[in-house]
Image 1 (cartoon, each protein chain N blue to C red):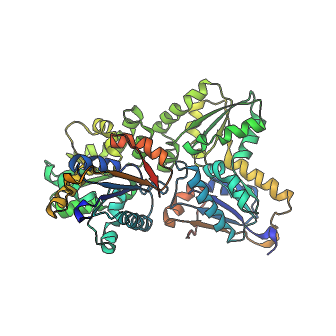
Image 2: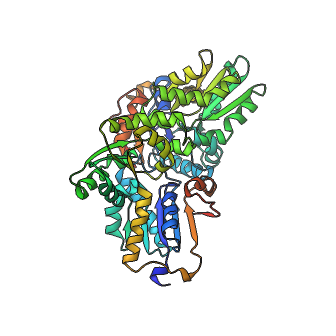
Image 3: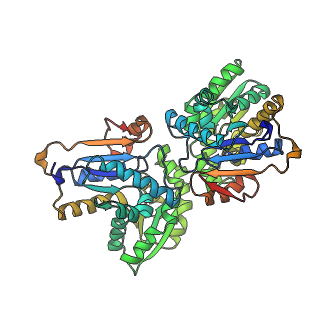
Length: 266
Length: 266
């Protein structure tokens, strides 16, 4: 098969990476996708760097079995902790979700005051903060871990006074620091956008890391002449998980905005 | 080494099982303990039965390497899903946390109206409900999954209005059903006792599954002549985890009510 006709590989610790799949389908509708959600070992957000790196290496190895031409690490935690190790080990181009989001934030911030929210591991790794210092050295960053956001999103309490209270607790200090831009540094967070918006106020610009990663993937594939041609037929999407497929199939709908027909277990 | 001088093995998906360790130290102060927390793969509460059984078999195999004489499955999810498989596979006596809690609840319930709270997997498995039908056929049971309780406990929001709001949301329907006894079917929940108490009212009797499991272990070891003799010297506790030890060591303190000196990674 021609290199450009091969699928794009995307992995995440679980279901959240489907928000990246959704954006890829929107931006690159002719591409084939192989998705792997490591549902047996999720979440990654509260595990150590060494463990997250080990899991990520295994995930890329799995995707390579499907002959992928390009890999997106949809998981913010993996992107923060494992990207250098993955790039040292594999030749395939690998894109994370951190840099594209930071580039966008630095481009749109009016006064250079950028907030970042994510899991404990993502925030603890300081990787967004480091990237902001590199790409936008004039900017100031403010970071906050929000460990309850993922379970709240998975409960489906996306438009709920409890979620609003939690969001106010987490985001109050940032708001008082007058941030003007907020990076949603976890694939689950776009589901809570409404409550996060209420908690930080209407003026603040949001950066969705899933969307920015999809746009960057498009740019890179175009530049390298690796985009699949429409003429090659219906693209096809394959979803793999490490735990039982059923719950992924059901909940996945909310993330993907589409029905998922088949999910396979590895 | 004489059989009775061997350690008790205890495993959990993570840190919560330390509440069982605490009770064992209280009830059986002369016993040696080997604890394993599967922190690299936690939580078990949102995984499938097949995955939880696979992980549990691996955990028991690990504990057997330390020559344990008796095993307590401190994890409610493992106890609900994996006990029969574990007992088929291994000869060592294995105690779960479900039956002791149900026996206690059936013994103390004034009007036979028993509530059960736990993770999605524990409640979904219906194992508490089945055990209540078997041991207390005259009782009625009311079950509620509380997926936000574990992350709230791990955030340390144990005395907090958000936690109270969440508890009221989860427990309101049970309260209206006039339960008189409530089984805390997850090792993390005793940390939230105060807010759970406020949400269900002062009259309701609590059953703590960790405490009841420790009392049952004591009874079984006494009956089988397997209790360690005080004369054999300081008992010694060993803690193992599958992810980095540091966070376990720190957070463990809250669960164990004691400082943990050494944690080893397997």
